[in-house]
Amino acid sequence: MDDHLFRSAMGKFATGVTVILTETDGKTHGMTANAFMSVSLDPKLVVISIKENARMLSKIHEAKMFSVNILNSKQEEISKIFAGQIKDQEVTFDRLMDVPVIPGAIAQVVCEVSAEHVEGDHTLFIGKITNISIEDGDPLLFFNGKYRSLEELVKV
Ligand code: FAD
Image (cartoon, rainbow, N blue to C red):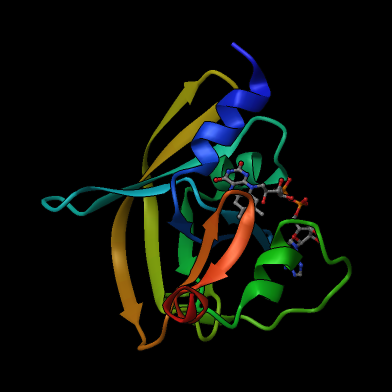
């Protein structure tokens, strides 16, 4: 199976965009991710998938907690910063339950790691939700390798 074909097929699945944050030794580390899914209502669980060479992997493994921040339509730059596409930008964080979160995200979901599963070249972290904050606003979207907004789709 061709890697390009696999990537192209997966890119047909339109998603929101999140930034995952965690903290080790008092330092916040962030990573843009769209491999995020709700798993269970009782208990409240989500899953994220982190590639084996991402710095984020060992940090979540150590911290045993993370936040998932669902970005709003005006936060494309934040997504690019935490995907390594815009370098050396300072970002200010808020805190929820003493865990760093992204200000202005339409949802901030704080989790403690309840399980880790290595699958192929990614690790799935199951997060048990300990706190949630939500705000009004439209989501930033990602489809076919490009950022999109609901506004743009409504105009088409
Ligand atoms: P680094 O490359 O070290 O960090 C990423 C960037 O964030 C760096 O530029 C760094 O300077 C910056 N940064 C980190 N912490 C801070 C801070 N405190 N203040 C300011 N800047 C900071 N990869 C996955 O594994 N899973 C996914 O689900 C996934 N989904 C993605 C979805 C999209 C839309 C995009 C664009 C990328 C996605 N990626 C995903 C790729 C992933 O975001 C990048 O490969 C990322 O660079 C890997 O992060 P890292 O932990 O290795 O950290």
